[in-house]
Length: 309
Image (cartoon, rainbow, N blue to C red; front, side, top):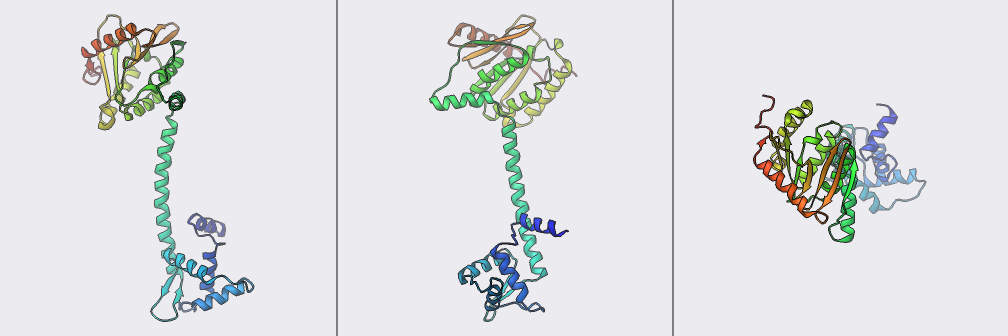
């Protein structure tokens, strides 16, 4: 190891060659007997005076540094006879540095876990959720927005995120028909992260797919596998229910939050959706939720349906 890398490694371990502890350590090394016999406090203090040009270091401060060095395992103190002997050598330093290294590695691993958890949290944040939470925190009440519409798959996903997902709290139920949402894989990872975040909040999500023969089959296979994976994780899997029905009657393509409001897909050329809060049309909201529940109760779990058996 080069001199530069050695200094860098020691610095990483918290051994600063410029601080008071290193000055004391240097004084011990330079004054102890070559045969390994330690040095005394007075001999060490005399050496420090030489190095500082006669500027005295307070005795309590020297004792404090000695205590730190002994605690780190970088010196050994022989108290069997007076005066005490302060000893350090290659084996002592090696054991001390190894103990410090192990402690440092353990701390780094703990920090790494914390950083990974923070990274996962930050990566899955949805700005619209945070914006709504901020408004509700400032107002001290639930924030209600008026009806609005949007066009485009991505824009509809964002509308669902801001009006449905961001409102969801523990115990809430999200109902979603999936037929319209089988056109692209571009949102798969984001949807997966959103789902996990909602399941972690103990939000029940109920999905239903009508006429599976008419959707992207590769995407359907992927979602079935993802659903199986989620159901295998008890703490979050119990909040996901995905079903399929072969009913040919027309149904609403919508995502709802309890009976508070729905994002209703009203066209697929171009894709257009509208957010309808209960305050705007409570009758339509109830009708959409009731129709969903009727279809859901008569449907089959996505895994049990064995679509690709």
